[in-house]
Amino acid sequence: MDENHCHLGHKKEIMAVHDAMDVLNGKWKISIISSICYYNKRRFSDILNDVDGISNKMLSKELKELEINKLIKRTVLDTQPISVQYQLTEYGMTLQKIIDNLTAWGLEHRKVITGK
Image 1 (cartoon, rainbow, N blue to C red):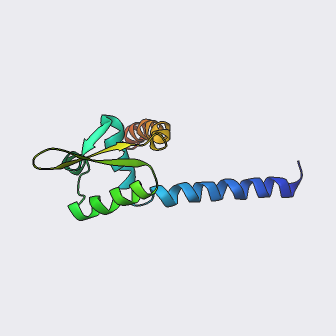
Image 2: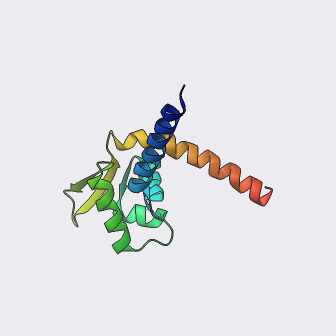
């Protein structure tokens, strides 16, 4: 394999990571996706309770961005008062493996750092 081929392949991989992080960046998105992922369907208030420290306004903004990127689907339920439910789209479900890997890594990292 020539040097340029490796270099181009590597550049493409770095760009792919950049693209993925562009969609999933920020303090909250992975936690929001995790909440929806673990429970399949979540209401706004459920996600708000799951994600420590997030404000209503920020959760609303992040959910809209995730919806724009076709990772979650928003459904308005015919209830009184009206409630909204979120779930991963089929495309969003492709993140399940990443969430599982992050969970496993996070649990292991906590053991390494705390010794527990």
